[in-house]
Image (cartoon, one colour):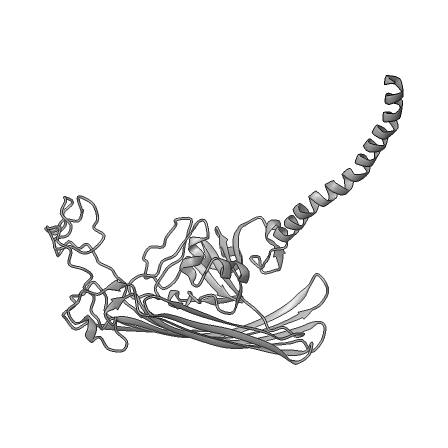
Length: 383
């Protein structure tokens, strides 16, 4: 019986083994499919860090890129948020805002309010020459790229430490799309933004319009006794609020298969309140430990306080900011690009741009809050 059992079981065992061998490739293929799809999805990220479209894994430089989907999932709304998710990049606007300086790999510039940067910023290949115009938000952005390391050979002298590229989403020549987003939060936060694109002549001409309004009342109390008597442009009791709006229109035309034309206009307007801030000063006696200069100490002994204190005591005074202080900036960007494809490997491109901006700053935290503050107006025009 034993012999008969073995003889009968052998064909079954062989059949089972053959059946298993037959199904193994299919199972392996099914198991590998998600990995292959995932790999292809990762490798399909396309950037223009070297002025041409390339897969991010194919270029020999350090680049961090955020797609529109990434920015939505991570709630990226401004350059501060980009810096939070980018290794090696630091950014924080200070004072009344609109004066931040991007810092890559810890190499900051000589002065934080220096107009010329050592990290260049571009929108669709157009250089933005002043720091109070470089934080453009994420509305209408298809991608934001941060290129790290010296890039002066490709981007110019001001890209000594790297470059930041804003790439806008172009109108589609074949179909219409649009969306509207509303944000409601505490502190009086109210946002509404949207975009709409449609072909005017299918496969030949398309247009897109965008718009955004954002308001916020601030998050830090202003201890100034007249904080609730601020003007419409002042701090209005709390500190760190804003009233921002932006809008734009763009056209894309493709009259022939080889010729592509792009025309776009964007306006970015911002009114920013003073932020909660204080300064340790030798003249007020905050600095208390050695290293004197002209009779004043230049060193602080002890822990730096989180909030302003009365000199020589532990009593907190709160943030005393002149309620009239604010910064207002207006930036307008017009750009045109024409590309003619000579072959699959070569094309000719002409690009023109005009950037006009103005910033108006009133007061700061370094001046006595009960005195009349000086005003500073600065503007630029770059073509």
